[in-house]
Length: 409
Image (cartoon, rainbow, N blue to C red; front, side, top):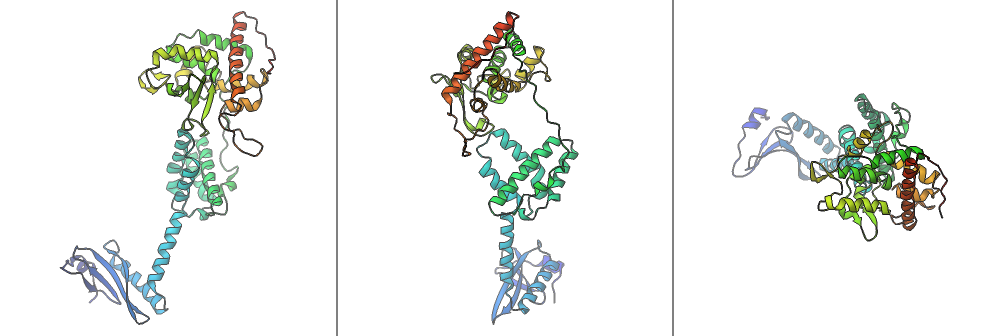
């Protein structure tokens, strides 16, 4: 008599496992521990064989009967259903290895591990929030442009247009990695050019006119805030590193003997270690600050506690107190200031400047220069830059600003 769900549920374990017949070769195996498993028993090539069909009740009676019916059809064709099951399992494993989620994880480990924490955090957020929930289980070779576009449209619907473009770039890098490793034939995001709502490129405000720079530097010297913020504000134009690199600077990263700051790769946007030579003016500011914060980790600790770095609003708020709003000058704007004046006024080589800005600079063979490239020349440049800024302040105080073309030797 065929089984029913009621009877299957009522079957109790015994000292030894036993079988209860359903019909057409389908049995329910009951083990001493109470586990119940579906078995399809068949004969092929004069041998009796068993095919496991899953555990009850996860696999219902109806599903077990359907699986048994399919297996019986294979047996009728001389095909071992166990071989079919094995091929399907291997195929599923291969599909999982080549899913968008699996490939993106592999890409992240291979390409993002050496980059800064902020870059890794942005990529992680793009993958975990905006891509994997919708594309994660799909074989990466089968993902079509409209599927990616639907993910990006969801982001646009939140009103975050820049995020949509950033997520598209992350997706493109994953697809190109899949192409390079033989898991996909092409990057479907290339078909989405122009599909997203364009964003207005916003340049961070910066002062690059020498006369205005002189007035800004004079205002900075007169700033009456805390010693920590005052020092960070004074060093911002001298070092022109990224604001996050400055405010998270640690005393252990200052090499006093070599007269330079040595930033590790995990702190840098491009994931490469970086050196900032220190001019006499920069060293003087740091030596003045050392008795105040030198016993802690951070050069510029937060007012809320020595264990935290200065807030990312510290320098920005100081600039605003001096009358410079976000449309006039930003903490990041000191980089643009240095980039412009070092090139157009002081006449330094662009590659020296780009190295000091910690931008990616490559040689004629496409190889990235290491952090010590042109270090001697960069040290001389940083000293001349500091002297030039001092000169601008002197000219401002005399109310007779003269812009001269400096030459490098």
